[in-house]
Image (cartoon, rainbow, N blue to C red):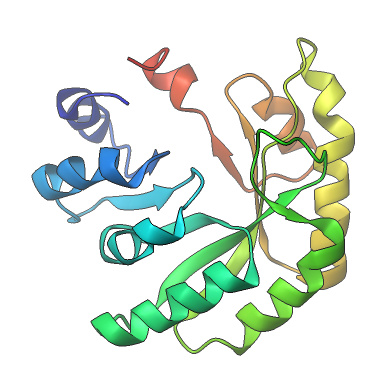
Length: 188
């Protein structure tokens, strides 16, 4: 939700990985900025009707939350001739109705499917915990995701923690943090 000029300033300061919440928000930015030296991550919920555009735009999709979505992405990669697409499985540990993610009980089937894909490459797990005023209150969610990763995807990445709670996430093993607000300020 920040303008291209802001992203160009970040690039001038050696930022090279940008996350977007919405496919339509990213499209004009990817076209204007390009892909040279920049990696684009989709970090927001992916609606199935936006899957084709997401496969064409993003280097990494961090919000794969069902076997059905994974099947669709794999099929689209074949149709558009995309060799590899890195993905994260988004896990919902809190059961919040306002957030996406696969339930912990269903995660093994998604991981098993992703491991069979020829085009999708499972890189890790992603989490959006509930928001708490005290960042330390997110610790149990980060800890649990790390435990799950260690059980079913040893060595996989952990995308967890945002501007408000990234320090706690790092303490619990995050390898990817989403800190746009800390860098760019509130969304416009």
